[in-house]
Image (tube, rainbow, N blue to C red; front, side, top):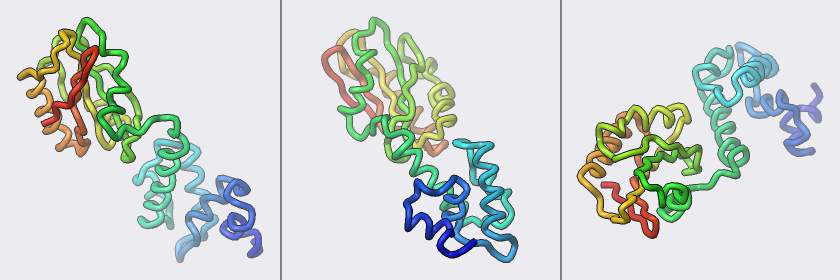
Length: 210
């Protein structure tokens, strides 16, 4: 391959859109090593990418001969940045109590208590919102397994939980405190941070995270 056609030079001259997926991987990997050429490494990496797409992991990339830990980290970091700022650009960043409440309009006037969970990525961008339980809130009803199962599947960095008070009273109950404490402790074990627990009513809201 002549110098003016190498992926990095091609990117500099024509921009990243001019490169194929394979060439972009070559540019990202940079060079080969004593084990294999950059072309061979990029070929196997490209095959894994096509097979696994968003499910590509550090462990899978370790199977590529000649691909070291530094390059694996760079590749996964590049994919994650792309996912956060391009693929998920329509999803809001939840970085304030007010933005949390914007996601809860559908439960504020419910006649029963709805307990919901928002999963967030490392940039506090919303991944998904799910109803976990409907009914009276108790520590036994809101089990950490049900709250964190989807957060684990989403590969969430943190979660925010919330529930409505149909009575209109914003005062937190002993059950509210117990659920919050249980989820904080579980999140610490799983390394998925509980960012907040929010109560909403038809006309108001508050954070109760302890």
